[in-house]
Amino acid sequence: MMDRRGTRTGEVMEAIRRRMAGRTLSPGEKLPSIRSFAATMGVSPSTVVEAYDRLAAEGVIQSRPGSGFYVSGALPPLALADAEPRRDRAIDPFWVSRQSLDSGAEMLKPGCGWLPADWMPNAAIRRAIRQLARADDGLLADYGGTRGSLPLRRLLARQFADEGIAAGADQILLTASGTQAIDLICRFLLRPGDTVLVDDPCYFNFQALLRAHQARVVGVPYTRTGPDAELFAQALAAHRPRLYITNSALHNPTGATMTPQTAHRLLCAAAAHDLTIVEDDIFAGFEPEPSPRLAALDGLARVIRIGSFSKTLSASIRCGYIAARPDWVEALVDLQVATNFGGPSPAAAELVFATLNDGSYRKHLDGLRRRLARVRRETAAKLEVLGLRPWLMPRGGFYLWCSLPDGRNAADLARAALHDNVVLAPGDVFSVSHTASGFLRFNVAQMGEPRIYDVLARAMGGGLRPTASFSV
Image (cartoon, rainbow, N blue to C red; front, side, top):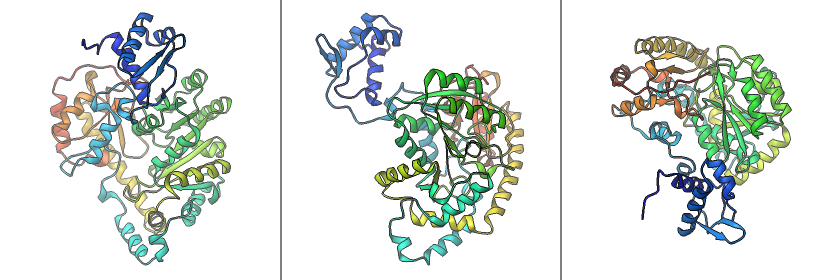
C-alpha cells in the first residue's frame, strides 16, 4: 500500500486523527462537511473525499449515505503528544519538562524553572519538620478539610489585605499545587474546544495543561510592558475566549512587569467581553517592590488569583492556593473533593505555614532578592560575551530571556548542549506561534558551573542555521 504521509491527503487524514486523539471529535460524532473541511485545510474537495474514504477503509470513520461521515467505535486513550502536530523534541513542552525533572545530578540545568536546593530556607523547613513531628496524630494521619489549613488561609488573607485585596479566609482555597489550582479552574470554566488566551511567549506548562483540557490556545504577543493591549482586544473580538492566563509580576519567561496602563486596558477589555482572567502570582516574592496586580485592581470580580510556594520555599512540599469570588470558591471546593478528596496534605500545609511564620523567612527573601540581583548582572555580562543579550533586565527573579546572535536557532543549540549534559530552554517551547526560535531562557541561579559557558561557546561556534527572530 502506498504511504501517503507527507501528501495533502495524508495531511487531512492526520488532522482528523489529531482531532480524535485530542477529543474534539467523539465516537458517533459527525465529521465536518467535505466542502467546509476542504476550506479549513486549504485543499480541494476531492482531496478530502479521498482522505475520508481511506479513513473509512481503515475503520476509523464510517460513511452514512445521504448523511455524511461519522467517527467509528471508541476513542483511543488520550495521548497529549498526539493531540496536535508532532513537534521537534527540543521545543516540545512535555519533553523539555521530562529532561529537567528526570535527569540526574550529572545534568546541568540552566533552562530549568527552580532555584538550587541550597538556595532554599532549609534550616527553617527543618525546624518546621521537627515541630510537625510533635503534632497531634490527626494532623499526621487524617484527611484535611475541604478548604485546607485555616491558619495558612488566614495568613494569605492578611497578605492580600496588604495589597488592597479584601478576601477573607473563606474566599481562599488551598490546593495541592499551583498547577492543580489551574487544573481545577479549567475543569470549572472550560469545555473541550473553548478558547483560552495566553501570552506569547508564556510559561510552557500553561500550554501543556490546556492541551489536556482540549482547549484551543491563542497567543497574544508580549511586550516589555505586558501583553500588547491592542492585539489583546482584537483577539477578544475575534476568538471570544473564555479565559486569559498570565503572570503579571516578573513574567515567565521574559521577566517583564505589566504596567498600570496595560493592566487597566486589559481589565476594561475583559469587562467588555465577559472574559475571566487567571493571574498566576508565583513570582511575587522576588519583586523588590510590588507591581500592579490585576486581582487588586479588579477586586476578584473577574480575576482569579492563584499561586504557590514552590519557587521561594520548596518544590518538594507542594501547596498552592486559589482566591476568587465566593460562589466560585464554593464550586471549586466541590471539584477538589471530587478530584482530590479534600484539600492539600495537612502535613504539607502545616510545614508551609510554619516556615512562612518563621521569623527568618522574611530575611531569607530579602537575602534571596539581593543575591539574585547580583547573579543576574554577572550572568548577563558572561552571556553577552558569547553574543547572548537579555531582551530586558528584569526588576527581580531568576530568568533572563536572551536573544541569540546572527539569527541562530535555539533548538539546535539545545540539542547540541544536551550531548554535553546541559539542559537548555529554547524559545519556541514558550511560544504558541513558534516565533521565538531566536531566544533562550536562562535561570541565573543555575548558571554557577563554568562548564555551562564552555558548552554554550562550543555550540555557538557550530554554524547553527538562521531563523526568524521574536517580534514585540
